[in-house]
Image: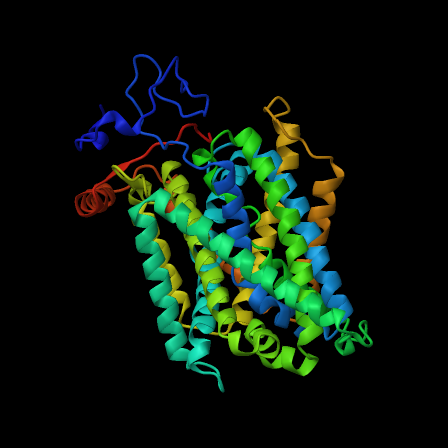
Amino acid sequence: MPDRFANGVTSSLVEPPVNGHSPDGNGTAGAADGQDEKIVLKRKLTLINGVAIIVGTIIGSGIFIAPTGVFYYTESVGSSLFIWSACGILSTIGALCYAELGTSITRSGGDYAYLLVAFGPLVGFLRLWIALLIIRPTTQTIVALTFAHYAAKPFFEDCDPPQNAVKLLAAVCLCLLTAINCMSVKVSMKVQDIFTVGKLLALIMIILAGLYYMATGKLDNFSNPWEGNYSTRNIGYAFYSGLFAFGGWNYLNFVTEELQDPYKNLPRAIWIAMPLVTGIYVLVNLAYFAVVSKPEMLSSLAVAVTFGNKVFGPLAFMVPIFVALSTFGGVNGVLFTSARLFATGAQEGHLPKFFQLFHVKQQTPIPSLIFTCLMSLLMLLTDNVYELINYFSSVLWLSVVASIAGMLWLRHKKPNLPRPIKVHLALPIIFMTICVTLVLLPNFKEPANLLIGIAITLAGIPFYYVCIAWKDKPRCYGRISNGMVNLCRAIFNTTIIESNESLK
């Protein structure tokens, strides 16, 4: 056994290989004959877990804060509902394209893995770089702030909660869920499953109340539904808020190595989750507009609380509780997938080796989880949710477009690559065209967010050539890296986990 595994790890983490393949057909590979055994992850995630990851991650903070954002930019009930429907359709198209990518490249890592295979290590590293610095910490911080705002709202009925209290509560949420994810995959998935059910019940409660409200003839808020603001800037930002609420449709692709029978369960999970979420989102917004007036919608970040106060009377306190539980589960889903992304980057040599360490028994990436938590805590220095959304959306959607372009390039570059799912050519072309348009619309007048995102992305190039491409590094670099690995091993009882397959 190589020295880096000489830490007393037993073979219980390794599926018994049969001719280099796992006997259960789940694709957990052992070592070939005559070679050292690799320590790899077991496939523990079921179809239900996969659906819960997608639904639970999508339905986080977005549906409770984005309705105000969409309406703020459109000032129109009709166009807001149209944008919500369009965002659901666009996200479903993107998810189907990712189903082709996820079943042809079954490695965890999502966009990073696909860009690495399609365009090489530099492009893959840059995607990992922006995920590390922008996309993942910002997403987790937005969801945690929304959780904190709703959780604190019942104690401040007549005013907004103090910002310092909201930030502190968000920090507690991030730290608690990081601890849970460090403890056990099963425990974190139970949290995900339970809170997914809870958030669906909360949204169904809102939908039924809104439909009852409309059935009684209270339709005043739907007068002049198409009157609003249709500038290109505002339409673009409205789509940003709507698409943020659908963020998470590709997160199951980040943990495909832990998904049982990914060829079948990945597309099935998408087909179950995406229509479910889209239908719920449109109906919830319909309920919001039926009950909450335009001035009330624009004046409150916690639109669901305003809705509850007008509809549920003495039971209105239940709404912020349910919303807080919903966003709590959303933070859990983002943390779970983020840590796996960084672990995949370390396995490919694009991040320090300590990101590749998993707990010996629980198989949880403790160092990756702690780093993800710390980066999110840094993002709490700002508390403007909509600024955060606009800041990271341009970079996020450009990276998604790059992944879909990679899918088309792989069809040309590797035509014999197994593709259990192959979408019609029109779908990726439509998806990329719409996404590029949405990125450009608001940035013609306000290019700062896009330029900052591009600058941060390009700043990763010198880091790549110095830290990754440069092979003859000084010995002190190796000593520091090994020192960090040994320290994490000693503190967290972890070992280096290898992938089932290579992306090279």
